[in-house]
Length: 111
Length: 111
Image (cartoon, rainbow over all chains, first blue to last red; front, top):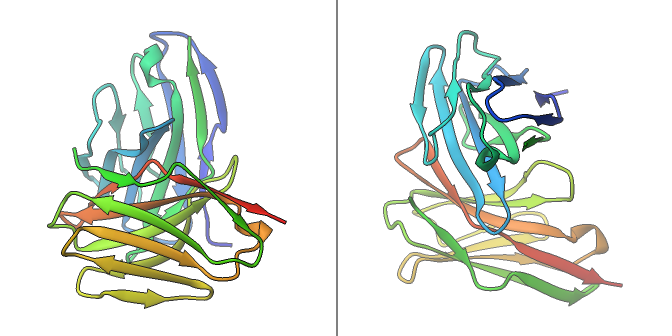
């Protein structure tokens, strides 16, 4: 089954404790992206990647890092999480066609 | 950043009626638009898309209309069913890899 997976689905952490949210897709897509979703604001793009070792900032990259060492994986790294990064995070991928496929989401709470 | 606004936060319709969800966008350079459906606890699901060189596109029970003159996008759902109850939001693309999203309209379908 074609899908985008994210782990963990739920995470509670404390301010300053580094964390990584993994994202993996099995569709051999070149493009992957991370979004955060906050009430009343909709999805906002954090980072995206056009291919292995090629990444670029979206609209809200501050406080986040990404890497793309393999085509299927695109982890989101929070080196020093802060409470304002409490949010619902989505990973997405797309191939030659334009349709983006979204993962199930990761709900993060930073205390 | 770019923004996509929605005219109504909540829309209630009777089962069997047609639903129309509207969206306004600000970036005239957007070349591609998408409508997504998001059910509670799930990631956004692609419904239908349209390129900027088109005015209308139809899918199964759904139609998207694009009016570039007034920068307006709408989603029409025919014969709305209880399973259509969800949050719907539009998205636009610019610079090929960057996406912006509206905050969503909650569609309630009354039996």
